[in-house]
Length: 374
Image 1 (spheres, one colour):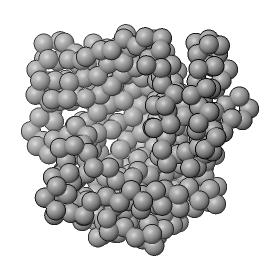
Image 2 (image 1 turned 180 degrees about the vertical axis):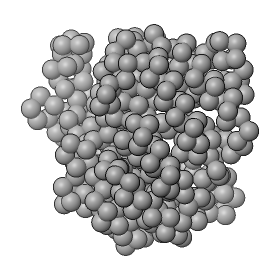
Image 3 (image 1 turned 90 degrees about the vertical axis):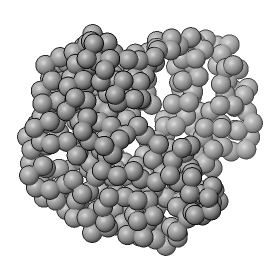
């Protein structure tokens, strides 16, 4: 099985922390959608498998008109074999959610909503420069539930300067009070070339406190464990059976195709990514050319990829898979490199799997890089 990701690079306003590829100027929406449809046609041979998941991300794909989104869905079904029960996710902001759109989204086959709540606190939302209020956040979930969407995930951000432990707990409890079965929770990151980085450098905003972030993450793991959630990936928590099938593709090595500017694709042997420039992307597709760069992955690069992605999951790194896919020598090297983290109780070995402990999850990327083959 495989997945398709569609990047819609438009937003109503720029959140201070965001470094994703997007534009707040919307005059290119129609030519952009035409270009994405053209890319879908040109790339129809990239995936040989049936499509099990479709994910509209961005940017803010929910700003698209009903007609535009429906046209995209028709295009995808024309060129790809999308399974009848495929998981089809739409990222949406609370201020885009209303009854007419919800009804139309369901009609065109969207069966999972990823709502960018980020916080139920107006103070936090103002600080982030979000386009919605706390009241709209609550109302969006109520409307989605009333429209019959039972597969909903919401995003929350922790570790912001003004976010106290008490308000963080309120945010999580508020999400759980709606019967939400999936949460994606991210530590605030100061990304290069963002408004947040500039304002911190100018002393207009308080810097991020790593100790607070670690504390918020530790509390989050405790609260959601008590609520019956599986911590199935570093930033993702779900009730049993409610994991994101699409995002799990990324962590399990499933093949996927990315459409739109800045979108990434992976077929097992290579990784490619589209140009992150709207005008050049549109110009290239007008000339029937997909503007991407490609990296062919060596056997050892594929192993490093597996180490990084598998350690992010609750199942961890499979010794059997390394032994079968790369060899006994490579497995022995990994186990030797892992000894330090095992001794420090950042990693545990159980049932032939190397798995991060809660302490290890606080430094997952560093632990993974320690095991890389260079």
